[in-house]
Image (cartoon, rainbow, N blue to C red; front, side, top):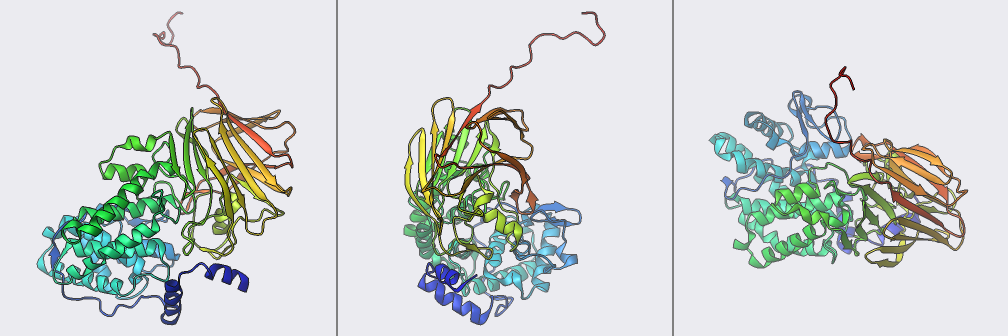
Amino acid sequence: MTPGTWLRTLVHLTPRQVIYQGLRRLRGPARRPASTTREGLHGVATPLPPPSPEGIIHPEGVQLLGHGPHDPCVDGWEPDADPLYLYTLHYHGWLSLLPLPRARTQVEHWIDHHREGIGWEPYPTAMRVLHWLGWLGLHESHLDAPARRRIFGSLAAQLEHLRHHVEHHLDGNHVWTDLAALCSAGLALAGPAAPPLTQRLTALADLVEAQLGPDGVHRERTPTYHCLLAEQLAGVIALNPTRVHPGAAARLEASLERMLAALPAFTHPDGDVALWNDSQRNAPVTPKGLLTRLARPLDTLEAPLSDAPDAGLFRRRFGPWTLLWNVGGVGLAQQPGHIHADGLALELSLHGERVLVDAGVGTYTPGFARDYARSTRAHSTVTVGEHDPDQHELWASHRVGGRARTTDLSYGTDLLSARIHGYKAPAAHHRRLHWDGRRLLCEDRVEPEAPATTRLYFPETCALLLRGNVWHGRTAGGRRFRLVTPPGTPWSCSPAHGWSAMNQPFPRRCLAAPVPPAGLTLELLADPPPPPPPRGRFPRPGAPT
């Protein structure tokens, strides 16, 4: 990392971020509350629908993020683990899955034994507040008076701490969650400390509108976070903010509708997200799960055509194929932490089964896995230049310095095209996708001439066989397809890393080939499904035929 990289990163921060970044570096992370208990809250006035749970309950504890079971009451609240695991442990996202006595024990153990530390940082505090609110809405009446005093006293202290440490140094989804937790608490709880929290409703409405693009997609361009933030917004709306601030409530409701309308642009036929940027499959909140939770029709996810041009995300259903296309871009310029260098990348489903798959994300810890997942060479797109440089200047775990430029975007019913010029790249990559009614054509050109490599990533379970200039593929579910390439194209086929979720490896196969000066055109065709077995009665074993 060079001073130039620093400057190319810092130039995109807002003045407010710069000030709060400086304050945080002077004071350190907000891990020590002024008090661990306060007066001012005494019960639930309006129950919050419990957020979607996170974690798998095991007899020996809770399993989070692909790790083994952990019982915080036995093994502690700060095990030797990476920061994301520690954050998730302190969300208490599994409370609603536990029997009441066991859940109460864990809540009270946290109150007694985690009086300062990472669990008091603002983001895990906000997430924990939301999960506690959902749990209390279900079980407050089953708690005795001493337990209620302890829990609501702790909750009041957590909210006071969060109120003074909203994460303006980060901006993005962290501030959204911080404000959603404060507003939800103000609307859900009873006591003199609750009403002042609802004063943040206007700030939340302002922030939500600023962080959504005109197409309704959250501007961090990460579908998993879009779904999580939409659920948080729906939680605030479920608490009837109209009784407190009708204007802000109407704005929040309109924003939620836009977020829901944008879901098809990044959703596969299986109801889950494309793995764009730091997205994961089977996350606590998926598009299908979100709509089901909100009692919305699921057929909206089956739209044959869905455009989110400001986010650069597109979906097309071409015969048996469902194409998800990611034009690329940084989105929220001041907070690109979840962005990958994946401009013009593809994902594909065939008859509802995923065929082209993105790298996903397996960790936020700096190192090979994190660097690879964010790199251009990990995605089904083209690297331009010697040694496969990234489209963006990626560094650390969540930082972006110089950024690629996307231009010449065009999208229609059967045709999609755009051009991307990577940071310091010697040439631009132009990709054109076209459906002619039978074939899906992918045309790549690099202008001016420069070394370039195209890559396509398939699940490891997908069989691939090259015959002449045609790759024959068969998915794990038995779907067959052909990838027709120009004769003489020097393909390589190699194993590749991939992840379906945090700490959940999803091995892939990579087909790679150089892009010649005249360009490279690939054709994808779906073979007809095998005929069904003949109907009729079959002879008994051993019977004469």
